[in-house]
Image 1 (cartoon, helix red, strand yellow):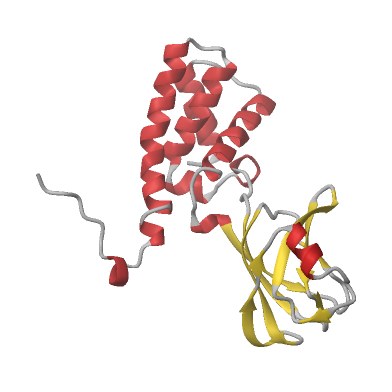
Image 2 (image 1 turned 180 degrees about the vertical axis):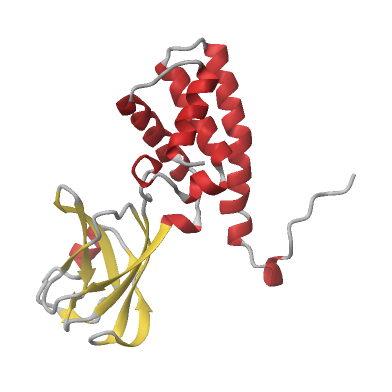
Length: 217
């Protein structure tokens, strides 16, 4: 289901016409709810970052939302084995490495506010002693179907997206509480399928974990 088809389906179901701006807002709210509630491979992204010798802070990509892992190559630039850094809080970093001039191969990192309104930054400990390369695996929100027209969610789980938008549309229209509750239940039922995929099947190894089995009564 692309964006145009989504708008037609919601307007037909609600028997209401939405302005382009209002429908775009409702759709983005629905997507945010979905993406923040399930772990899907499409929400993961990799980036190669360059650490600067003597610089303790590192700016993260503008679409960064949360960290999965951060690794530094043991030799510079971009060579040797990956060494995964451990996540610590800022207080630990300040106490363990009070002098930013102390350099070496970073072992820890901590999220440390923003460097610009759109860019999250981290601090490293110890401060990089060379121009190391880092590999970042992180959570981000993909481009909205509003601007992309077609997305993985719309193509593979259009029922979840449709029902999520219906909930937002009902609230926007100030529908009766029982109508909103009905749409919410329909969303919950369809979302369970996506949850089973993202937090279940996609996080299993059949060799190690076995296949999904339902109990026999």
